[in-house]
Image 1: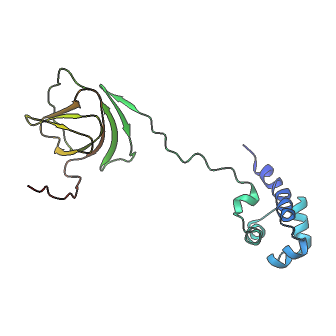
Image 2 (image 1 turned 120 degrees about the vertical axis):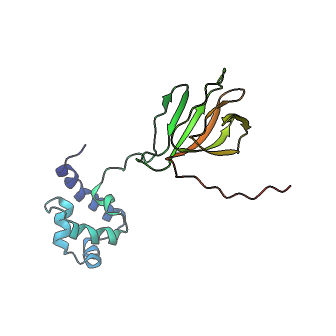
Length: 190
């Protein structure tokens, strides 16, 4: 990583190269920026330390971002690379990282043979099937959800879920008790 002095030392040559690439004279640049020719010359030769008051009008005159003039380091990779977690027999990918409130997860749930005992806990869950088939046991009732189908339920009801015929990919929104997810859907026609 470059030190501040190294970054500042690179400003002058960068200013000179930019001006010369655009075929602009020091006099024309001085007129456009209000900065004297001697100050511009000293900036380009490294004899004058660049300041914000000098760099802002130069960036405007050259129509470039300020970070291009100072050679600011590139911003890091903006992609988020969450790490999957192993929770019992599931692979869980947290999609949110904030305390409290509704949390989002992508889960890969295996087929569970034999089915586990139904469990209860505080909260509210919304499951959306992305790929595969989800077998959901909820309060003594069993159903199979296909890709594109969703289920919403209070987790204080005895429940378990697993893949039906293989693993299933699920988007899960889980919230503390009282925080329900709401979907608007057209009613089915009879």
